[in-house]
Length: 378
Image (spheres, rainbow, N blue to C red):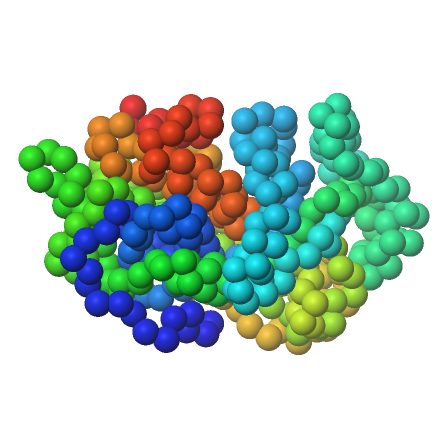
């Protein structure tokens, strides 16, 4: 991945807000805060966009991710609806194009069991008034001739979209930089407390004064001393991906066979992914790649002969219940979390930025308690 910033800033004397983690979420939160007139320092131990965000496939498909109409699905849906305006605003800010496009998505079933799952999803989504269409086998073959002929049924989500995750990270960092956000390269080791109150954090042992701190460091957030998260409260889940060098035979994202295909207009098809609880091990494995290759070829047989351009892995941040943890930490005024997005970090970026900016300003959090950071400290 290209270096998103040609130079870093020196250690500042202080700031209004220090944001730890310069992935998509961290950069978006920093951008929103700077737009509101706050001085913001973004702390990143490597470079902006270097970790899980740039490893993502960039799928924006809430109707596949949501298994029922509940608080989590509504948060996904809320963020998905923000994406068009979010992309437009980034473009107007002069940020590089991040490849946002309304591609749609298709969820396929190979047998009766999988078709029954789709039927349940179709039922509640229609009751919720969502745009969803049932496709029988002939319709699937007519619309997506490159997909496997054994597919029996599918659901079509016309409102789903995609971005290029690496380009998104570059775009968000450029927008944040233009808004005045400073980048401090280093590792956030611990919170800085004075008289029992938050005063900032230490970066490689050096103090950075801040009125508020936002931890948006993905799976690494629990490693910051003083945050108070047990290791099990926020753990890494490895996801491996395969990039095929093949002119995409369809535009829509495809879900099925336990995986997905994300066609990109630049002549690539991304295939994923694994969900592996292996600690902070980001290595690509033969077993992981083999499972992705098999699922990809099952969905689209011509991928079996397509050249593989790249392999990579990222570490997704997971909470015990699999739900994000957003907002203030009750026991430490001024400390806020943007954590636990798991495989929906890109999708949830716009709404997370909005919620965390409001949280820092002291506004009531427009979020059910089961999605708030406070639950991890109860």
